[in-house]
Amino acid sequence: MASWQNFVLSYFLKKKLRSQPVTDDEALIVRLTRRALGKSTLQLPTPKNAQIIPFDEENLRGEWVFWKNQTPSRTLLYLHGGGYFACSPQTHRSITLALAKSLNVRILALDYRLAPEHRFPAALDDAFAAYQYLLKSGVLPQNLLVAGDSAGGGLTLALLLKIRDEQQLLPKAAVCFSPWTDLTATGSSLQTNDATDAMFGHDGIRFGSKIYPGPHNNPTNPYISPLYGDFTGLPPLLIFASQHEVLRDDAVRVAEKARRQGVEVDLQVWDKLPHVWPIFVGILPEARQAINYVAQKLNQPNL
Image (cartoon, rainbow, N blue to C red; front, side):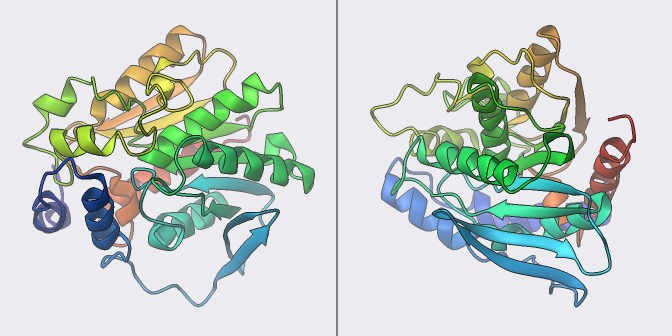
């Protein structure tokens, strides 16, 4: 049974996000989304023993996130969501702080370039450059994880495809929270869950999906929509989705395809929760349960 906090949060999200006007005006979509998501009203104050240090190296920006009382032996590259055109590492500190603590890792939360000012392949180029930076700085692939949510979850999968295609060493594992993997907007849950998703509707996804690719890129390119890629050889994947979100099938179809192609996949589809619910770790007990599950899986010595 869903918690009372989830019912309250879902009501708030519907009022804040689902009330946005539906439009195919790209500039208006970007402006309204950045206004709604740019400064999260649900962020909690940063704990005193948490460390956040700006990162600015080799034309890349972001922030390091870790805890002062821990000695991390692993590194996690985190790619935030926001449709490829909104949000930042700052809006996602709740989840990066929680992952840093539960996994005992230091996190590089990447502030990749956003569309429409920087369309595909800017976000992927930045993610790949950040991954290369970590390897060059001495991080061993077996001590390296990648994670992301929504668009950042799709970007995580696209990054894995590019790392493999470039014949570089892959990370130990990857985590995708409600990944957006199909920018052609063909998943059946876009229609069937239109009324139950607290954050987004079918039309919003369909209009927003045009912004990152722009008019000159085919959205079936696997580096844009990983659903259309070949997952052979990728590391273990832990994928979360809500049974009642419109992007559910983006996660389910990727998981099914990756399994058929020999990838170890743990697909977690949880009931009656909003899109990327683990980001609300300071509010939802279900978010804390999800973070604990990630830690349980990724802290196994034989991973």
